[in-house]
Length: 399
Image 1: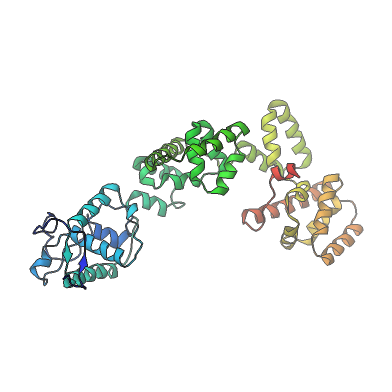
Image 2: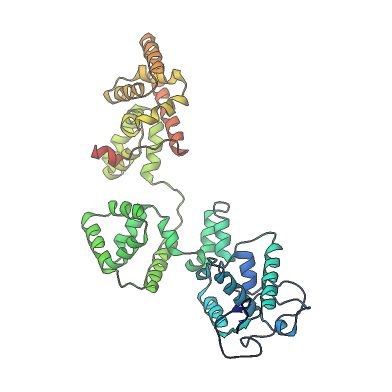
């Protein structure tokens, strides 16, 4: 009868060294290099090139001293699985998953004393960990993201290869929907259907919005044909798409030319802005359209700002700027924004502003446009900080 305190591993043919692995390393402390034990202790099964736990100490019985590092790793993994622990073994490289599984298949019964010694050694190893570093270049790049230049990070990623950077689908899910739509449109319908299926529902819906109608219909129908797609195929598609992202040349600007020009003209005087836009219409009508979409003026506040966000804008502005801008507003759209602001702030503040506006004389153009720019800049800061979210131009068109 088996000892109820023993640990049962899958049975295999008996062998003196518990799996034909080499004898354990000489006595002398924990050896974190080149073994799964070190990887488990330092990085939590995160993909290091390791499969051995360090050799046991000197005072153990002879039977225990024959345990290799791989055998100890198998014991620890089986013990954790028996206790219901969720071990991310799938994050290990395939060859190490195979090696660990094969080792477990070679194991027989482990007596209670040996189990306690191996578990104690593993616990001591974890207890002695003072600082953990990412395993490999992929983890280091993730830890250093935003701390090193994009050029350096890009070069290291290319040298390491796409697989070393991590799960390609995680990278693809992080792309903006317009970039995903561009990828899908350039690929076959079947590949685009797999891409759509791997995205979360919100991002997938946003991707479809940026696709032409006929293309979106073909891709959504092709999703019905993906039932038999294998994990290996999905993996290869992810790597191929991620490799395309890596192959894109590094650009100097995050914004498009239209967005950059729109931000500049937002700060320009109205007369100069109209002059430049007229010239752009004559030179490149499409670019002029992109610029217009990116310009944000005082007149657009009523169209793009939610009524509940008006008090947030009023709190960060000097009341005198509001008075000056409202007193200067004469164009129909500017007046609409002024009324929108007054209608959605506190009644006391709105009444005070109306009273000051009625007493205010004519406002010079430079002063009035300066006050409007101050309001727009304050709004943009609130948007950048996440306190205010603007309605999209598409929502305006739908309304």
